[in-house]
Length: 334
Ligand code: GDP
Image (tube, rainbow, N blue to C red; front, side, top):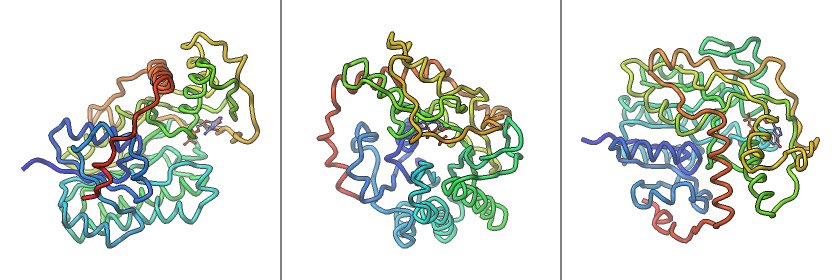
């Protein structure tokens, strides 16, 4: 029997890359999407007819149970969450409901339906927050600093708890920032590449950013979803830090993006307190050695390649707007 997967958050950046990857591995792929996100399907539009979408969300305990019961996937990937840090301050209770308790709803539904289902939880480097030391590995203590990362820490520990005390094959992948042309437009990388492309095309004149000194360990989302699958193919479940082990600043990202368009960033970038967040004293930097040694995982896309890929994609899509008229098949929820 072909393996099958249920992916929550399938309409998001990671969900769409994971769905593509799993289809290429011969999986039957099911996705969970909120009723509201069915208007937002452009990331999986090209998978027309190859994935089955079920309308439910992580607040809906009964819906999760029913879908798991009907689909009987061999693997579940929990990628759904409210993931944007500033929104987690605007909506802290909602963020906790989805990003924290949603994981418990899903894990418990799995336990009731079939304890052999393998489970992947999308953890985040934000869980390290105000870390004591860099780089961070699987044994670095968490110190979350916003409602989003507190919720992710909860989800990490409930995943570990269902593994250790309930015997589920459950892994928490602690993913550092991962980007792509499908990254949400509110995240700094996509904001930079999209605005730079707009400036190149004469559609914008300025890019307003927060802290240019902030540094991140940025990788390519396509590489990171491969690690999710690898984690579930091991003999034993565990937790893994996934990142490049390289730091770059927002300023460097800006410079690389504008240089690729033959523009001098200094003519266009303004610092705006609205987007300012204090930089970490200890940077968030991955030590992915366990993933490399145990999974054989390593990133394939370098920083400069990533920036250029994103700029090129934004330039192409802004020059030729996407046709989104072919999503009817997705609206017919299974
Ligand atoms: P995060 O790591 O999940 O918070 O991802 P973001 O892409 O939102 O932010 C990455 C870093 O970029 C953070 O340290 C921000 O302080 C910094 N940054 C600087 N300017 C901006 C901006 O205009 N928007 C966003 N989102 N982040 C910015």
